[in-house]
Amino acid sequence: MTEKLRTIEVDGMTLALRITRKRVKNINARLVDGELRVSAPSWVSRADVESAAAELARTLVRRERAREVNRRHDAFELARRVASRFPEPPAVNGAQFSTAQRSRWGSYSVRTGTIRLNAALRTMPAWVLEAVVAHELAHVSHPDHSKAFWRLLRRVCPETDRAQAFLEGVSWLGGAWGSLPPVERGLLGVASDDREPVGQLRLPWAGSSPGGGAERLERGSE
Ligand SMILES: [Zn+2]
Image (cartoon, rainbow, N blue to C red; front, side, top):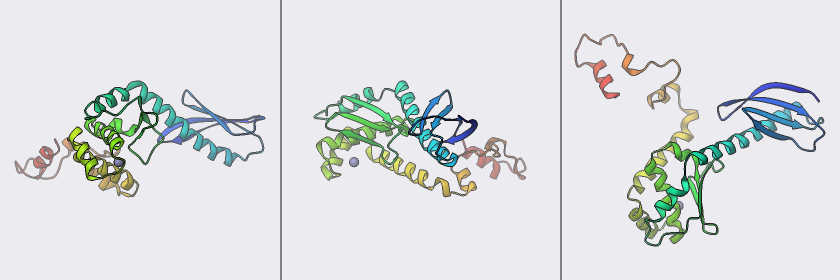
């Protein structure tokens, strides 16, 4: 019946972790107001409970996030709108954002007529999201990536190639992020804590030569 309180980091979020020893068979977890409540049998080691807790927390946080995204954004409406552009509109019975499919941008089930979209797409421009929906729906007529597939897709979604390139860039950055040196991360536009906004940079030659380096730098950053 021991109970200890500490914190746990999940997807960059900090959760309070409360572990309760109970007469249970498995390790269970619930997420309540930013607190992860874990119950575990007494014979499981503290280390094992904590590593299981981290795993369960990630699942719960992502599930909760998916609920929130779907509450706020109507993917179904978007999917129906995109489907209507097809010469033979595929059946769309449901569409939702998912936080479970990390490696894929979207999927469509012919059996159920439902589309699942990677929730990260919500943070990207709308035309990228629409292109992913169109891509999945085009697979109804062409399961492969044949010439006919691309022809149909470009017809219903003229932004296809641009979206494809955009997503390749996103994937690349996502994969490379952990190994990028801090300066290169800064160059890619992500402000670290100690970085001054470019508009406040005071370079030694600023003011002494109008139209010189500093001014060009400021103008270029707008
Ligand atoms: Zn495809």
